[in-house]
Length: 279
Image (tube, rainbow, N blue to C red; front, side, top):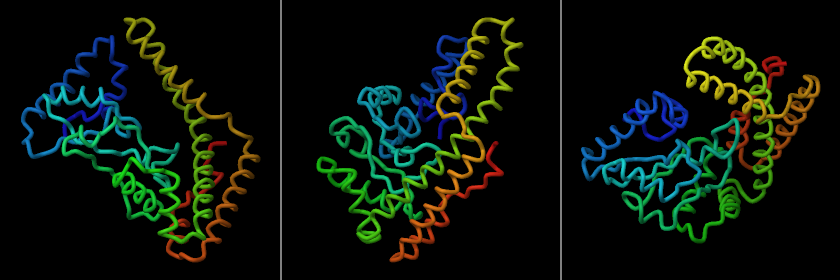
C-alpha cells in the first residue's frame, strides 16, 4: 500500500494544514507521485481501491472520483466503502444500523469494475442486520428504504417480537457510550491544552507559520471542548449512568427467544466504572 490512500492520510494528518506553509510541496508531491506511479504500473486486470477523500467517506462526489482518476494517470478506482462504521460518535460499530451513503447517479457505471466493495463484519451479532441492509441496497438501490430494510432484516434474524427491543437496546447503548465519551473528551481536551500551551513560547519568536500552527492547535482544543456539553457533577453523572445501565439490562432480559443474541449483547455492552471516568 502506498504512503497515501486518501487526503485524510495516515502520517501527515489533515492535508489542509500544509496549504500555504513551507511544507505544502513536501506533503502533496509524494501523494500525487505515488498515485501517478500506481496508475501507470498497476496491471490492468487489478483494481485500484479507493475509500473516497476520507477513510470513511459519507459522500462520494463525481468531481472527487474524476480528480482521483486523473491523479491515477487515468485509471478509474474501485470504491472501497467503510461508511457502515461511521454513523455514531464514540463507536465504530454498525450496531443495527441501515446502510446509507450519498453517491453520484449511476455510480455502478462510473467506478472500476462497475461497482464497489462494502467493508463489513458479519461475525459480530450486532453487525449482521446492518450487513443485510447493505445487500438490500446493492441489490436494487432505486427501491431501497433504509428504515424498512433494517426492520425487515432484524425481523428475519430474530423475529418480529424482538424488533422493538433491539432498536431500544441500540439507542440506550449508544447513549451510554456517548455520555462516557463526552465526559472523557471534555477532560482530555484540558490535558491536551497543557501540552499545546507549552509550544507558545517556542513559536511566538519564530516565523509566522509556526505561530499559525500553534493557533490551529489552540483552535482544535476549543473546538473539541465546545463539541461536548460541560460535565455533570460526578454524583449526577453516576446516577444517570446507573439508570441507563439498568435500563439496558432490562431490555436484554426481555429478549428471551434468541439466547445467542442475548449473550452477544451482554458481551458487547460497554462496561461502566465511575472510578475510571475523570471526575
